[in-house]
Length: 261
Length: 218
Image 1 (cartoon, rainbow over the protein chains, first blue to last red):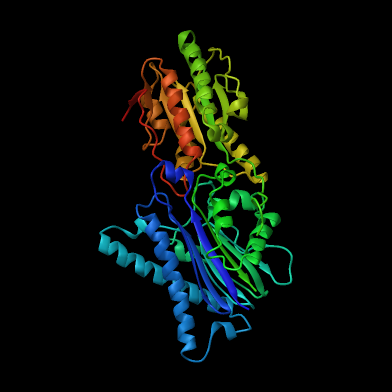
Image 2 (image 1 turned 30 degrees about the vertical axis):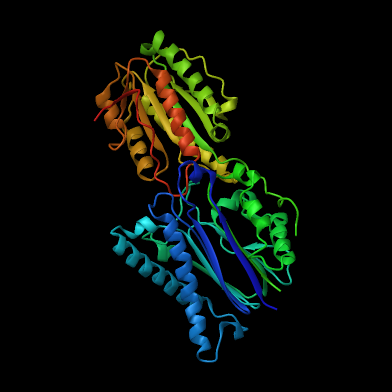
């Protein structure tokens, strides 16, 4: 019994044409029954967006992991917590995560002699146990969850779109703390898919943001049938690099898939 | 392991709306109006060369005067370059307000149908001076620009009242004086700009192609 997870990104055809790197990043860390995950999408307008996305993901994961390590040193653990923590506790945890990310950004920007807006990116981060998930999101992208005893896939936060297709909030935006969204869901999570906005056109009915059930079911089955998703990732990479997907978007795409078995 | 690819959700294309606001007052008669019509045709052909843009860019054409909706919003492949006739006054103020209302209506249609859209453009082409009250239109342009509701571009054909046009448009985007009757280059530029807009990245500040078809009047 435990979590398995895999995060993969693929560069968008638009970035390829312009000679830009992939500006998406995703990662995870597993402590038996506790999984910590994050994905970020670097802003096209930021010079070091690829670095920003990677730093945001690794910093958020390290920060959340440090809280678990701290608990363990005291013979406690997030995974022993069968009752999820309150919305307020979750907000405190993720505000401190965002502060930590901005602190690391500032250090990086100072070293490089540029402003932190050159590292601008969106950020999704979460902690999940077999009993609950606590998640945060700044900017666009999506986290979809299926609970053990439910058939439907549910979208935790409706993507944070401005009026126009190409607008969003970044961790470096002045309104990042105000736009930080936090949710705790106590419904025995079984499958989680966190993604950047590159996949939204094929994964959601955009009219009302309903998750495409067959799309997410396929991803869950892939995780179900894959013994070691870190090494057996051809299927996922084939999807992310497929012409069918690239016809729908020229943006970078990232999927972080998690399954509890 | 699952085979092939997952079933994708089918969504409508993102839209990139543009309103062409064309002066058809009597001073445009003769060669100017013919070149203008030909320019619209060039625009259509050029956008169609880009698959993504041809599915995204939606055009409406409003002529003045009098103010008339020649073509409601259609994707470019459905656009028939209009036969414009130059005759009448220059109710530019009325035309601008009509265009802004038209865009507001279009956005409602997009929202109702869950269609994502880019910041719309209003593209005014004139060789004259408004013959109606235009101050309210100027205020709506500036407010709309400031709120990011649309981007307003004014193109002056020789003979246009540049002093008034400058008061009509936002300071940061002064009118551009067209070289002679080079509508073709103007519309190729508009097409190139629309292609860029319709493939825009998240949060990207859009760099438009250089204006080779006129002089920016500052």
